[in-house]
Image 1 (cartoon, protein in one colour):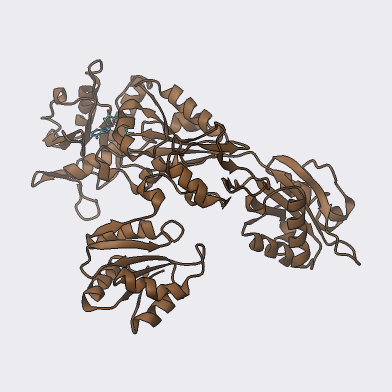
Image 2 (cartoon, rainbow, N blue to C red):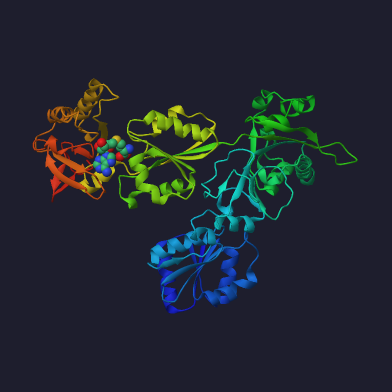
Length: 562
Ligand code: SAH
């Protein structure tokens, strides 16, 4: 929830505009400002003050608790010229909120957090818990001083600036799950590498379970901040001591069936859990259920004076790389989704066709490794992207329009195995970009057909065109015509003309949303294939499609009948 507080009439007007723009996500705090700030501070994740930063600083100062507890605070000035990110720039999301407020109110976002200003990711924004000399290392990263990245394994981190690398340097950024000695020139990122398998008899006290887990990690020299999850058997999913320990560590509790656990081979099986829950191992087997290396075999709690009620075992998993398959949209920057832009900045390796890479170079963070290749090298691009992800890196594989439509997603995912995470970001595909320019041609059932017979035999393409023609489906042709392929489009139009009249509207859109965009609405009888090239899509209406005021409109069917 975003709390909104104003002090004057003009502040209240801006406040109300924001509340109207974000229904359900904001709460207006009326009444005396000091009390309003106190309540909003306690109740909201973010607070927007429509008054001076000085007043805001004085009001929130007594309420501050710490970076992880305080809400993000943004101040909007009396004249609504600026949205100032005042508190919680990263963790509280105030920088991002200032940007969004600026869009709604038409003012300027003001962000002073050092790392954002230099477009270098803050150590606390890398997606991993961080501890140690955070400020000193951040300063070195920002100042361009050499910083040694010393990682136990490759994790899918966002790009780091070029002064951060593997060469030895006095300032060190470590990526490890091991406990390391405090050092004023070292910060430590904690990767989610550890799985702690836990077993407990009914009623095992929380302190006993949590105490065992913490002591086991400490004795093994492992950081609790690297625990990705607690794991146990289904039958213990509601065991209070285990549930409480997961909550105390701030990690999810994952459970597995007894059959599954019984199938995991472990060094220390025993009869007791076999009788109780049906598997010879709970702690070791649930820690090992998803694979990995057993660092600490089964260990029992030692409550003193009575029998142990808890067991645990610790496994280290291999990092999982991340492959984002990102559609860039048809061309115009504002048709590239915010999510696509985020993924491009999230990836440390970018793979794509050179002409698309050039379009988005300005969106990349410094330090992003760009692997571009020319037309035709599709298989190779797909293989490269998957190999980089399998090595543990964060990779973005890009394509124009939607990356899954006649593009890179399928060859890449055909290569990919289940040891990487795959994230798809949809893009505005050419058919939709063209349709919006033409009017409303896709108001009823429609299909896309690629006329490229490089990878598909012409007989197959022709059969599909014929089926669409017979079924009266609107057709958008991709890859309609190139220098070496000039007879396919006329042939396809001829097949459609067997079932549609010559006055059926046809939309031809070239370079949709790009600087040299052009489009026209013509007819099946009048379309000139010579005006079509590889930068073009051709949309042929169905028998109900009409040209109305120069626009192509296909009725939805239930009101106008064809
Ligand atoms: N993945 C892309 C399609 C790749 S196939 C997408 O989803 O849009 C390449 C074909 O797409 C081109 O030959 C052309 O027919 C069409 N195309 C792509 N971008 C276009 C644009 N901006 N305007 C018109 N047609 C486009």
